[in-house]
Image (cartoon, rainbow, N blue to C red; front, side):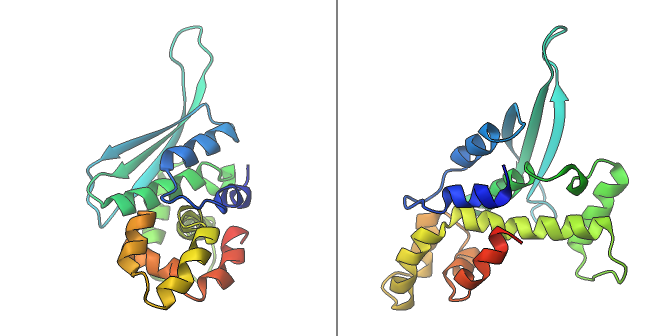
Length: 196
């Protein structure tokens, strides 16, 4: 399964919020995962929203190894941010092997690149991984705020018949991200977000 096909499979959702368990089950049934687990853990919010660990697990001596993705998300965040963080990490389940960190120095480099606002002059694999991570945030929004549902709401929002807060509550998204998906420019950006 590709990220564009994942986004398209949720694009017609009208009943919001889109459930994280539904996204997880869809990803798991369309890729080489035996199981995807979601785990809430308290973390320092300003540094980490969520992380994904992928590994093989063998439950018995003669049991077949199972490929597991464990998504650990920050329990200290609001529900809206937890949903965005989980959806973003579910998108990373679909990453190609070259887009994944596998060595401690890659993890450190990726975290540094994500926390840094500076861009290196010589592009590197870590820069690509950081770009991929940032794009996954927008792709998660495309899933959690399906365009068909936003097309219905956007005119009422522009005429002040529905508030940003009401849409945020309905979609169960952080208010600052809800404003982005309701903006006039979001539909223009969406094709490049879906298939960069």
